[in-house]
Amino acid sequence: MTIFLKTPVEVMKDVALRVKTKRLALNLTQEGIALRSGVSLGSLKRFESTGQISLESLLKLAHAVNALEDFDELFQTNKAPVSLFHEKQTNKARQRGKLK
Image 1 (cartoon, helix red, strand yellow):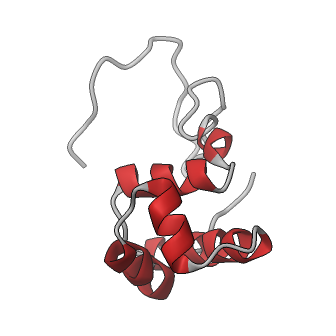
Image 2 (cartoon, one colour):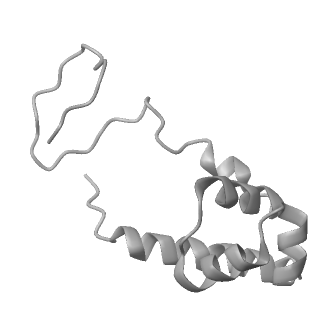
């Protein structure tokens, strides 16, 4: 069992740093990747400094740095969920979420 201890803000900043690192490895300026991706320069600068960005813009940036396929496994349903509370597993697929 894996326990993930990062906060959402930490994950956002880590993703922003990885995109920036990939951008620099491709020898692209902020202006260059903004033009290449269609993301505004202001949004890119905010993303690289705070990690805040819309999902659409993040996907455009990922496409611009050849990393869009990294999103293909996000929220895959064939992965077994990890629970700290060992809830009883049922074979019935849930049709909607719970409020809790």
